[in-house]
Length: 199
Ligand SMILES: C[S@@+](CC[C@H](N)C(=O)[O-])C[C@H]1O[C@@H](n2cnc3c(N)ncnc32)[C@H](O)[C@@H]1O
Image (cartoon, rainbow, N blue to C red; front, side):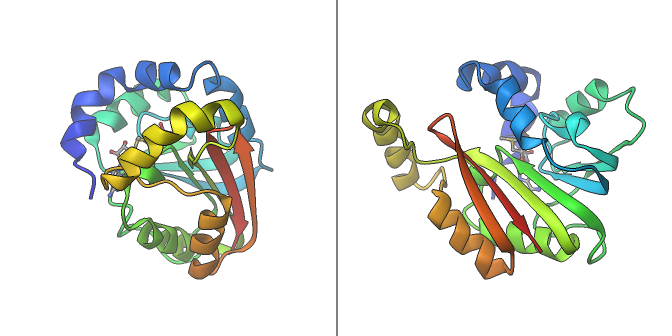
């Protein structure tokens, strides 16, 4: 389990640090993630400071995270967006009924969890039949330059057991085991992956 105290400390700097880490792809990647058809009700799971919260195409967006500090930043950012509801909660035990969302988004968070399949199962449970999962995270690099620079670093932190990443095939297995169908993967900028699937 991720220590939320880490995110409490990070909250103020998180957006700036993420923009730097994403090397100029921050806005473009977000556009791609939220390029989904409009839905009634979406869940931003492990929403943090709200990288995508206010940009999701939905009449109602519920944004859930375990860190009050990260949520404070998110709330400030989305103060004017009346359709955004921010709530503290645990992704492993979602406080929502079965089949209660049309879409679930999870961005830049999956690498934090050793037992990501438990969170994926919760996402599946709260999605209505036909609902969409949109998951974005770091991945094993698939471009030649990053394979010789960033890949050894990623492999090292994965081996240390502090960072959990998957390629399209790995994600495909996790999502299908949870029951998802129509699983699609898209590599973004050679070092991250966008997964889409349907319940
Ligand atoms: C790296 S941040 C990603 C935030 C955001 N989705 C983004 O795209 O920037 C990971 C988030 O997961 C949250 N988190 C960690 N464990 C959690 C849990 N068990 N339930 C809900 N949120 C959790 C952290 O508080 C943190 O805000």
